[in-house]
Image (cartoon, rainbow, N blue to C red; front, side, top):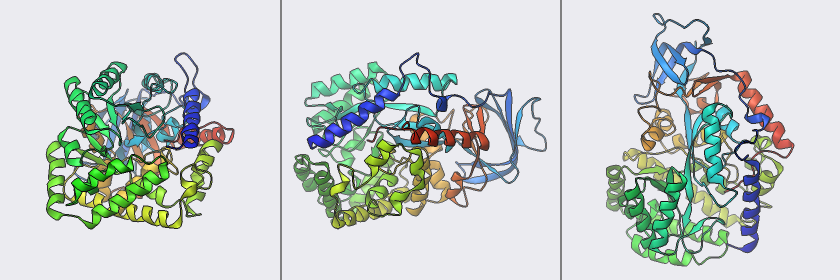
Length: 500
């Protein structure tokens, strides 16, 4: 990584750390609860979306008490508790709360944007203790969310990134030996990380040491497939999810071993853009040597091992369209402050300002291949997760999860299949299935009321009428107020400050 880019990223990440309050500080106005939790909340005459069966069950009444769903039943016989806050669900549809399974910004400014978009849970992919104590601050925020002091989704937080001897991102852990790998896992476990985040530059021995130590300590690990190993090796080692489809296309190639051996050369690149371009060329090369039998065997391995794939199609598309003036004029930029808008601007971004027409063509070919591969994985029965890589350029907090769901349908998933990637599949991934992911009595009351049927068009997930977050309801007026405050904060210089 060149020094100017590393310095820029370090400065921006340090700024991000400074806006997250330490324990005892008062949260900003935007993060304060907007309504009291009623005795009960009832959705009457609503169609409940059964995400497992992929069908709408008409004229149901769903009653919420405290943070849990008390009952789901026929509206004709349901009894609404006295004093309950009632939502008329006639002509509307109730789905479980959504998850974005790959985010990087989780602070007081972005958390409400997730909630306003019906996202009730996020997987934070970098809990970096070295940058202002972000790991501890994420845990502080999680505690405040659970106490109702801060409006935000449930947070599941990664360890610091565990990378190779020359980390790609400033602040990541440089793992050079197997002993360092095991120590890093032990430390992350003690710090309270929910899972270990592995990255591209890890050596084979160090990666396998992380996998072994994580298994011994009972902590999951997820992230990039390191360039030193195959996707099959990562899956067999127990990696819970593979991000961005990295390594999967190579794993389908009859020349996989040769291509992996060449990746040592990729890691010698000192500029991020050259690294990125070399990677894209190698992915394209793997497509030309695709082996159908090898592809089937790899997908069967993923299924057998319970390996989830998080394609993050949003970031792959965004990277391919930064030369499109209409794309970069996205009206949702009003929720981003001047720092983010400048960082995202491809004319100013320290990486993308050097991209040429042929580079964008390569990125677009990569995105097209990713759509095709995602559809193939789904048809083979591999479990997929909806994740955006939020806070990369044009990956918006909250909003872009809906973009990801639409892209999943472009890849060939049905609307019901795409919805599962953001509801029941995350619950299964985390082992939360008994408490989350579907609308059933006894489960956590994370719910989204929609004005249209998401089984007919997945774009209906954007037509949000109300959100229930751990039993706390927000109607449309309250959600609009959250968005207005977020916009005002961004225009004043507040808002998210951490691209990664």
